[in-house]
Length: 357
Image (cartoon, rainbow, N blue to C red; front, top):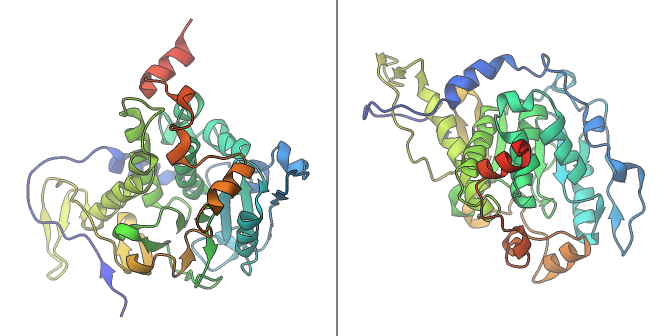
């Protein structure tokens, strides 16, 4: 039997939560059909898209476009049959290339590869983004965050805008297949180690509230970090930001305009907003939150790669392939590149780079 989860709050302190929930309700007007978005072909088009020559034993990763499945309007699924992956360039090492082929071969799916140029295009050139996610454009332009942190905020944004599947470039499908996501799923995740939602594999419908909350959490964390160029991405923009987003998403499940609902008696009690709880751990089941949207979670933390293989590499293979692809794991980013240390907050970097005469 599938376990159903809703947040049951107990009357407690009359403290208030942040304003993200109020803004989310306002942003509900931003439906996929009211915003003029670039197509994914336009978004992912870059200089490397037209130059398929890869040297040094690298392999060119192209898009795979399927006209019939890139929109929820033409399928029965709430989650579009789109796969997003990203890396510095379209030139991939043999193992990451082979893993990407497995994703693009899922029946009925389109596959889009976002290189650094495409990532920056989404973060800095789509007009309405900065209206919904304040400071995101400035962060991308002026704050020297690592490539990993930039990829974190980008994945929340691309999924919020377009929906579909995001999976890390060093992952591959295991038990997961083209029919794993059900038509009525608003979100689909696996359980990763430490009993958290997977942040390296995520699948959601466009405008899923969890992506909204996770991205705002990441932005808030970046803007309050003492040195924006030197932080642990996992804690600031990665899994912990997603977990905070899940807290806010679940908090909404039994609150509506300050109403508290007793699920057994269906009685409604008027109360002040309650503090967001420490939510966790995550287990397999269906979670309901904001707007009664769902997240279906599968798997077990003890076997996090059961459905999606999180890491295709063994031993030192990753370091060797990443070196060939000219990319650096975030754990080595600051250790080997002291010139990246800014010793400034993101606010300071924006002020000096944007407004200095």
